[in-house]
Length: 488
Image 1 (cartoon, rainbow, N blue to C red):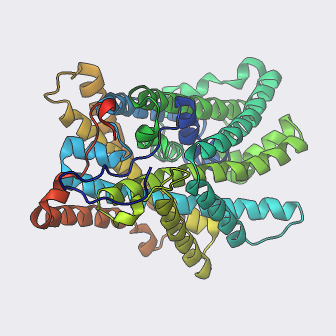
Image 2 (tube, rainbow, N blue to C red):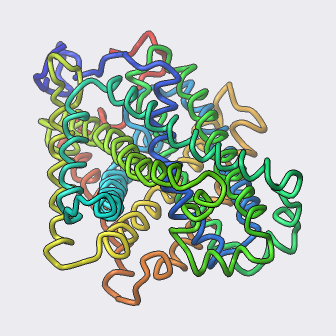
């Protein structure tokens, strides 16, 4: 394994840098599901969905979001059997829609994932400050955020399977605690734990459905990252589809069941009002009532570890985009350097860590709130970009299989079409409710999604320049191995 960057498009040149195959299917699942941050999603997003969304219909909304993303996963998985690489959205869009849109998608993905990493880092700093103060260790949020970013940088510098093992431990712990809470609610309330009212049409399709769906989709951010690890998987044609399906199903079942049990504990007719009063404390109060204060203390600590797991998972996905775009010289080629010992894209990890730290530092210097300003704005921006890219990939799947011999009426036609309709609708809802997510009426803040448009237009322009001035480099863009035997 070498860390040098060979020239592209020259006869007899060395193969481009390739990542080492160390990931199994379960490790990919842990990387992906951890990015969804089950504990922080339940504590942070679900009460907001109750309060300003469709109330008791939130469990059904998670099921609806899961169905949309399962339809997306069907086409995504079908394409992953033919396109193997570390480029994720960038490579898939290129294979279906062409190189200019691939570059636009790749740069958009970099901005979206970097924003999501910064948002999670801010949320981690905020909650870590609260939890540490409660345990007589008062440190300001920038210290905690800086420490989390430093640890993520170290993990990103080292072998990816080490990150997968750490994320596995953290995720199992947080899921176990929330599972115990749901079980305790079930023991006390019996059949009333899962009220049928949550799935009644008049409850689900109430005026707040759009807002609830928006919060539900935020909880899935990063689930599609399985394809980013195809080049590092021991069996990519199997691992990527299985990991994608497994991740969507696990996230959907987890959020739907936990949110449904909470509705049963509070009452379908009271959950909206109580969530509006308690917000982020709702599940801590439920834990006090059903499990005791010790379990609540554990839950508070696991909230912080959950956010760090999301930070690490998103950081790992983002630096794969930087690595691939560096390898194909869309971004500086030095980003494609691979560590000779750890076989990691260490240069991309370092650059991403510095960029994220700068974003967080700017918010801190401006006196912004780490949660209501930094976290909400950056996570909303990242979600807009990622949902938009998912819609583009759904189109790419339809085009890729249009004349392909493996085309199938469901896998490569109807399912991606249904996903496209759902994702475009979700994107409209996200943009329409962006001020609600960010919690501000500032015109500057609420115009920040235009950054995604700027990244996409910049990518289109740069691709056009490459086609005219560097045709060999242009022809090498968004390449992928169409058979595992061809992977360098």
